[in-house]
Length: 328
Image 1 (spheres, rainbow, N blue to C red):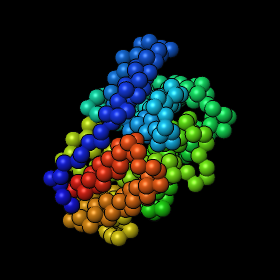
Image 2 (image 1 turned 45 degrees about the horizontal axis):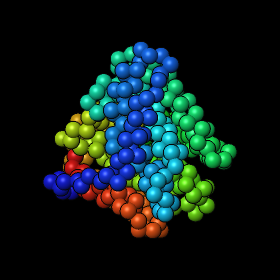
Image 3 (image 1 turned 120 degrees about the horizontal axis):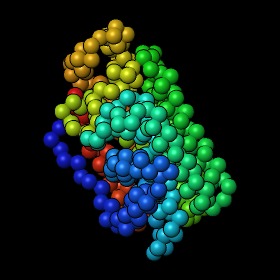
Image 4 (image 1 turned 30 degrees about the vertical axis):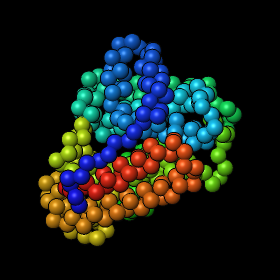
């Protein structure tokens, strides 16, 4: 795997005003308990590149290419998606016992698990309130609730699989489709729904988002083993918590010795040494990530080649390049 490539950033210039509106709406939230306002504002700076909000806005533009100005419900929908994302991050940090996220202490490190969970729950409530305010029909609200359930099921499934050396690749994909892919798919479909109405059953916006999200999660799992990369959060947290992500599951499938090490349990250093001796495991992980990225690209190709498709294509190119930067 090459390690000297430079990933090309995604150009969101065309939707910068809309993303600015989303950021302002998030920052304007008035928490019921003002003592946590500073912590909420700090958490806003840990949400990353705002890809999920961008998916909502870009797919709204794809669905209504003749419209110069999108309705304000679209940026509200994107705000709701980011609110949901932020809530899940807070809950994830509690479950993972993560001390930092993007170089900042996590909320539970400052105030404990109770405060972090309740603040995450409050953000979930705000997300649902925003969804009900902009819902064009009851089906829209029902769909968001179903996907929220899918996300939570994915998180529960991952927790249930802790230290399970028998869990296979299909189970992993089903889990990440829920915990990560579902939110990406929801973001894309929300943009279409708010401008064009409910997509039909052959919904390429959801297909794009879900497969992009699965690829995103596979890359995140790969990056957890890239010890030289400074990603702003602790490395090997999943492994130490007994969460065996795709590299380890592929490795156990092909090498019984790795399964024996995990059952041991062997020191984490021994697991890393094994992966370094068998770079084909990392290569196979990146290859499977490419499979789902190709599915996302095929779904995107069904949409007209308008300016809104450009940043979405760049997202796939970014992930494609990043999958090749997978040295342990």
